[in-house]
Structure formats: structure tokens, C-alpha cells
Image 1 (tube, rainbow, N blue to C red):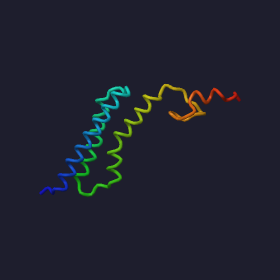
Image 2 (cartoon, rainbow, N blue to C red):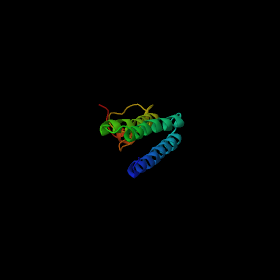
Image 3 (spheres, one colour):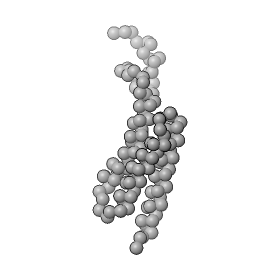
Image 4 (cartoon, helix red, strand yellow):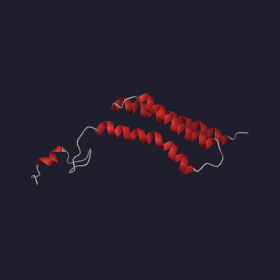
Length: 111
């Protein structure tokens, strides 16, 4: 017999998986990442498989589940960062999106 706790975890987990996929799809569309539906599907597959593995076998190590669940959103964030900053040449004197962009290098004498 299935307990109430398992049902609650399944319902809340399913809502979190769908919410994460919707957030990835909207963000990918807004930023301009290619194939946003594919990235949303990838997040559903990784997070959903982590949820299914948590609910299925009784003795699954939690660190392994966290790696599975985080894989989809983490890889999407790497792709998102590459889309936003991929074509710019590296500036060794400034951090990305930080103070000291192009205006701080103008006041420096050349070495």
C-alpha cells in the first residue's frame, strides 16, 4: 500500500519538475538559446528520472540522486552562459558583467 507521504512527494516533485522545465523554456526563449523545447525536455528527463529513482528503489544514495537532478539545469546554465558571452574576447583586466568593463581599460596606460 502506498503511503500518504509518498503520494505527497510524488505530487510536489512532479510540480517542481514541470515548473523547472517551464522556467527553462521561458528563459531560453528570452535569452535566445537555440532549441528551448529540447532544453526543457532535457530538464524534465533528468529531474523526472531523479524523482522516479527516489520513489522507486528503497535504498538509493541521495548524493547520486542530486547529481542526476542537477545535471539538466546545470548543463542548461552552461549553455545559457555560452550564448550570452561566447563570442566576446576575454579581457584579463575585468570580470564578466562586473564593474570595469570597457571604460576602466581606457584610463590605463599601455604596458
